[in-house]
Amino acid sequence: MRTWLLFFLIMHCSLLVLAQADSTVPAVAPVTAPKKPVKPVVPKVKADSLLKAKAPSIVTDSVPALPVAKIHAYDTVMEGLAKRIPYLNTAGKPVQYDINPVRNSKGQDWLIYLVGGVLLLLGVIRTSYLKYFTDLFRAFLNPTLSQRQLKDQLSQSPFPNFLLNAFFVISLGLYLYLLMYRLNYTTGAIAWMLIPGLVILVGAIYVVKYIVLRFCGWLFGNEELIDAYVFILYLINKVLGIMLAPFLVILAFCDPGIATASLYISIFFIVLLVVYRYVRSYSLVRQYLSFSKLHFFLYLCAFEVVPVLIITKVLLIWLTGNP
Image (cartoon, rainbow, N blue to C red; front, side, top):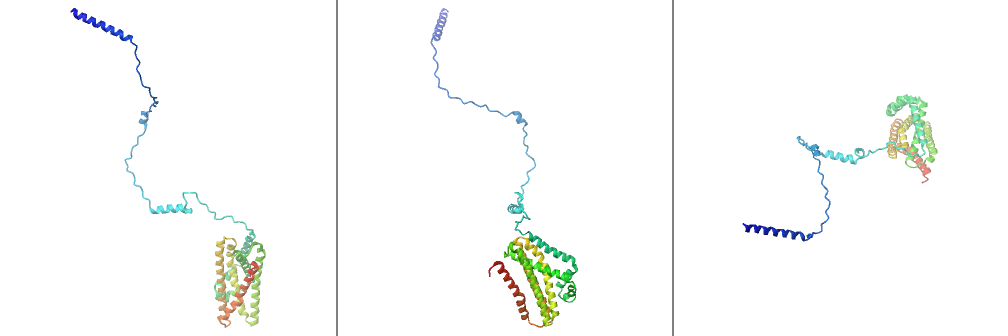
């Protein structure tokens, strides 16, 4: 027993000695490695659960989707035409066309008054002598009737007969000026002199022709034949003067393309009326005289065609200066 108490006392004293020895020794600091710089961590913001709860959920429709319509080839073609043709331009800027553009002034305002005066003269004659106009066109369209009944009726109205002859002279003279104007043979500087000159020239030709025909009828004793021939001649001339009235407006004021087309159309009608006059004259003369067709053709060439060609040549030389 005493032995065990002694053993525990010795162990207790040794532990105290060791504890005092450890407290007197200085503590050595541990060696640590240099630390690397640490980047700041940005905390992630989580979406609010309330927003997630309020967000409407997309509910798929239970109805099945309709099939896509096929594009027809006709629709494709029409769409291409709408893009290419400016008149069908529905998507882009609308195209505007001026159908009545402002014309460049050429100093020809006097032509408006001149053509208007010619048409006014025709309107006054027709309004004042409506029955004469009716008989005139009946005689023109019916050759047999004109020689029997209407010839005397028209001859008994000398004043409207004179007015229509004067209108024919004015209409043909103005037509010849517009013809040369469209063919670039004239200028505005000589128009004031050329138009009256052409009117006087046409009037002089038909006055001389009338005098020569009357003289030949008196000389050869065929006054009745000459009277019928003169009636046919001036009947066709009156109709020609009336027919030229719309062409005067077109040649004076329309565009060059339209004016050129109307020029050829008017020449066609003039040739047609001249041929019609010769056909009626031939059938008339055969009732009074016996002659061959060759003689009649020679008469046309000598007294109808050649004078017109000579006058035309003289006018062109005078206007252009070239032989």
